[in-house]
Image 1: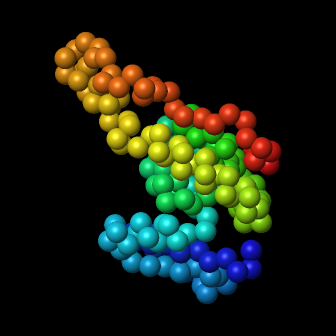
Image 2: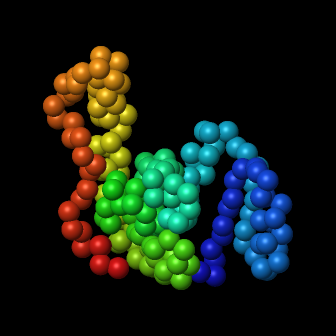
Length: 181
């Protein structure tokens, strides 16, 4: 993708070494490092993104157990995603919501990025499915299940959910036409 840009926001101990790495690879003009931004500005930066990548390593400590809100946040602002295949991701997100690649396989990651870049219809369908998922899993919907769990822990007995229309299972979209690559 000759016109691609990679933007990194924030601060941290690795920033200097990442800048040097980008420069040593001849990517200094394609990789831009930004400082910290207020949350309101980050939301807009996320919404303006063409494609998001969640590069978790499944072999890392807690890589298969820790679920980042980053995926949900990109879904909420309508950005297509390429996501590492971990047990926790697959539990919550179907292939119709994200494009998976096998962790640590940089060639597959690149091919999934190019696939989404070249296929506007696939991106549109993925975003549409993801926005439906976000709508059905918003705080307004999920808070009843969460508060029911808290209430049951405090009361030391099960509490009936306040809304019987709330599913206790993650939302998944059945076989999609886009789930073929």
